[in-house]
Length: 464
Ligand code: ADP
Image 1 (cartoon, protein in one colour):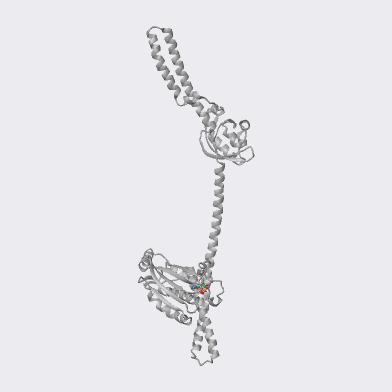
Image 2 (tube, protein in one colour):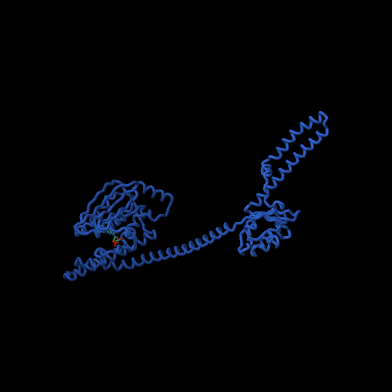
């Protein structure tokens, strides 16, 4: 191998032809041709000639054999010299004995420079101990597989090498091949760095999530407590202002009546706001209790309409109904009424006088869809997502209709989604809006409910 490493590339046509097995065949062919002639010559007693011919045949055969061996050696040389891997022989004394040209190309040092100093001088100081340990393993007859260390380049930088090696203790040398894995190592380091950053970001996110969870819990606890503390005195205010308005303790003059009505209205709004906030916090924390049953939307609509009709009449708004579905939903009746009430009261609030509001109900796939369409002010595309978020209202000039706290749609969305439904809006400014919510048809929803109960899933949506 030492000879092979140090050889300069030699080119020979015979070599390449011979390397394909031509020469041995040629020798055999010559032998077969000349041997019978020599034997014939022997037979007719031309002994000198025949001996000469036999020697000639033997000579040609041996030449062919030597040519073949030479060409195989040549092919081996060329493979080592052209390889991108770095082949070398290292003596037990720590010096390179032979190197292929890749060393020069990769490190930038000449062969002479590399062979002049102990090879440990070229190794990164941090890798010297591990390299020496690996070399002593090798010298004890073990094999090196995939050992990595860094080698110095002429420009002062280091390159990562991956080594495979065996030793020959009898010859006191190590036969080794190294591969430049600097790029791979760099990519690996980048990947590690990226993973580390990702892990840190995940950790940060986890901490934040925990904080948010804690804050949400605190908020709901506070809201629950606050709403209880506020509702008790508020109920007293509502109750007593009702008594006053009904003039049970004694008659009131017109001014007193007006004042009492203001108190009634304001405390009524406040009570509703507190209820909404409490609902929202229950939806957020998954603590909202649903009492689901099978029923037709028809059966809840009249009740909602009777509550809403006075407002419609005051604005001369027509309410139309198009109920095309006979399918049942599996939902919480009270909460569904709340959803319908929110959508209808918004439709009336944002529709000018003499407009129209239409409620329709139809089946689509496995769902029952209910739409509330109005001929009101409409919603621009950039606000269509935002209005479903809590405390958000469209910021336009319509302050006259901006009463409310921006909680209705957030609660409506939460209620629909907790009953496995979806809600969406189609609208054009000035052209009106259509809010639609879908709920699974009773059979499908009941099946999901039954499975959940069978699996003993503690899902607050399904708790009754
Ligand atoms: P609130 O009605 O109390 O302000 P909502 O959550 O019910 O709160 O509605 C949020 C906002 O969405 C409203 O303030 C309004 O800007 C817009 N919006 C809701 N329904 C309609 C509708 N039918 N037509 C036009 N805008 C609407």
